[in-house]
Length: 260
Image (cartoon, rainbow, N blue to C red; front, side, top):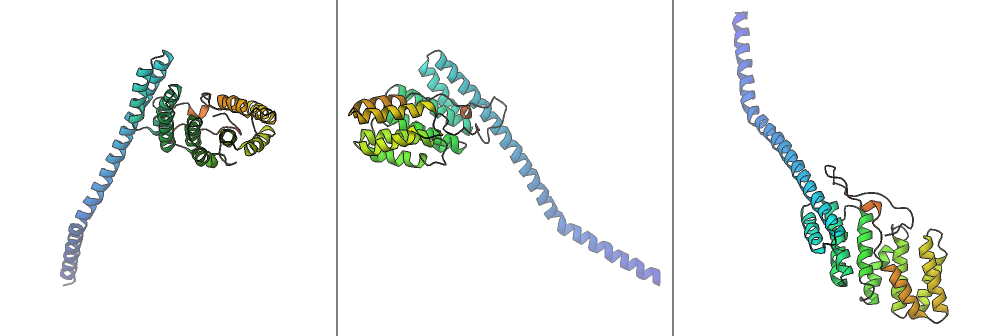
């Protein structure tokens, strides 16, 4: 009799296990499918990113090579391809290159628009501030003072990487707007700023001397010419070699007062 009870109990236990398995099986299958889909999606996303990065890197390098050969049309074409590939760092670089070409051609508004786009797509705040500063400098000769003030005041904050150059540009804008006393004060501060590069301090000192001698127009021409020169490409804009990750884009921190 005991054996009979044990056999019945074992049969009931086996039936419960089978019922439990039937209930769990759809959920286990669904979870496995979700994990598989997630893995395949991540693998596909990484493959897509790598393809975009390679396309952008190749197009950007072709654009640089075209510039070296003075083929501006070819450079613009390749930079546009690099910008459309989807890699944030190369998109920013390509837009800034195109902005530089527009500025050199005398299209200040077009250059500023491209630099603004570069600032929005920048992979980090340093590159974004550099692009914003380039946009403001492109408009220095044409935009009203209110526009220059709106663009440059945030960049002139002491915590921003290119604050000294933004302050110089803002002082120049004040001088061009007839705010001579304010401009002189700003240039005076820049001329003795310990963190300012020597060339910037010298420009500020020259501006103060010219203003004091009643040659504000000459000061405007001298400072504006220096401020709008194409700045050297800093290390933070060196594009990563093909095959490396572009998640963060070109990185790096410039020293205090680094040239834009």
